[in-house]
Length: 521
Image (cartoon, rainbow, N blue to C red; front, side, top):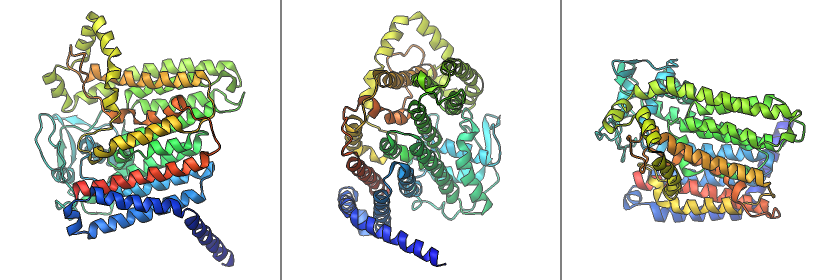
């Protein structure tokens, strides 16, 4: 009992010391929070300020806690805990405050999550629809409805818990049919969301908790993956945290979207790659490339272009392997994953795509993979020109804009922050092979994404205007950019720079929440 008392006193004393020693950082944070309030709140926020005051208090205390905790645990071995705390605190706020269905295609992700919550691994498509429960219909009807050509619900302006009765409705388990359920995605991308929905059903909670618990469980998965990635990687730990806490990344992770799993696992793969890259000479066996390839397979089944992650194996120094033949196994793994990717796309994923509203979309917009391939083969010169013109989209892709997202207004400011990290973060000198190889990898993923959408989402013969590509598809790649472009070799002030970067990261998340309240509430 006495030992527990001493331990408690030591913890309190350490936190008190860290609180006082980090005061210049959290004072700056509070001043910026105050500035964000004045620049984002509308008159209605000041007329009835109780809700806003509670959220601002949570933001202030949560941000201070993250700053103080980081200050006392800024050793590389402890950084993963800071990452988990930041994502958890601001992510839960985002999960409960963000309007219903405002994340891209969230309504369809909800349907698939509910189906998965009943233990159904492969959704059954009958009578041009998928069987779900009426509670999903009630939840979808809470979104601000606007009929579209193919979507039943595409607008979510001001659809919050205060504008409807989803917080008082019970969960209706009678049958409901919906036209789309992301059947092309593997089931494991929805296990976290499904767990949240299952808990809401099990405890017989009100309807809103199906959404909130689904989002929060999805966020917990993302926080776990990110914190593991930060713990595993031997380099770029702070840039990993910064990218993982990008407002758009956290926004997606706080929704029902499968992007939480995709982005989190992508960071884990990059961390494992850096772990292999920095491994001692003669330390790797055949097991590590296989593990890496399996991770790439799991990720690639959720986003086909991410099968290309397996090519990172070629950048691992051959001297890191006990036997050179283990390195050359990478070529076998690349071919194997390429074959599996083609099989998956042409069978399961292709059927899942067609068994949705997308089938009619393809017909009406003249989207046809075979016909587009035939057109490309007959117009090779035009296709080459179209591929060479893909980088022209870069200025738009860097704006991080997304449908119905309220934080588009401060994306330019965040882009400058991220750009400064990419160019100025202190990194020891790297070989030309790793810098050039990673640059080629990033460019390859970027171009491959556009080429994929040229065949799967663009009308036949339309090569100069590729449709369907969204900036969120490239977000994990920003983790690699500091290693490619940073020219700062001075490691003397790295600890102070890290403290400033963590402070600014938390500030941007506070701005995200405050601007969310100002825009939607």
